[in-house]
Image 1 (cartoon, rainbow, N blue to C red):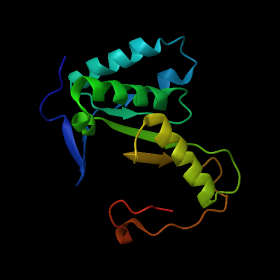
Image 2: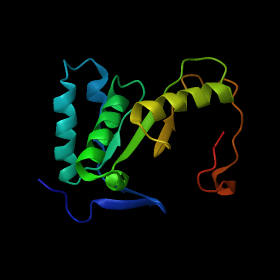
Image 3: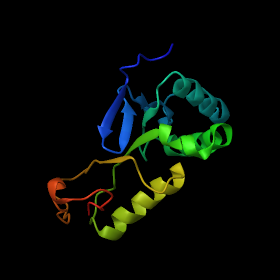
Image 4: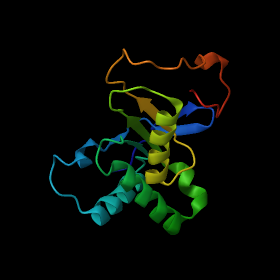
Amino acid sequence: MSLPASSPFQFTADLGICRILNGMWQVSGAHGAIDPARAVEEMFAYHDAGFTTWDLADHYGPAEDFIGAFRRQFATRYGAKRLSEIQAFTKWVPYPGRMTRQVVEQAVGVSLSRMGVDCLDLLQFHSPNSQLPWPHPPWPETMTANQPFY
């Protein structure tokens, strides 16, 4: 099955996505054993059908690692220039504690490394405790492209 032509969506000026995201919570460990090689190969079938956008998280077990392996094999198979066809939206759910720039940068660095990217397409931050001290970022309307939000 291939997706209809209306499936791609221009999310931002420089990021097009698929309207249907591939959820990867099933790889979190509670749903049985996963053969990594087979999982990555199946990701190619999804991509080839038009499902190019992945929903994952640092706490979904190896989800970010699967994206990294998929991207490496995709670059080998199709060329690095086509890597922009893959979008990966990840999440970060930190342990309760003081939220400093160093804590944030370290967590983002882990995701960057696991996925083999220089920049995250999207990071959803889930605070387990809204009472934690958090530096106030600039409001989105005052930010420029590729400006750190913290």
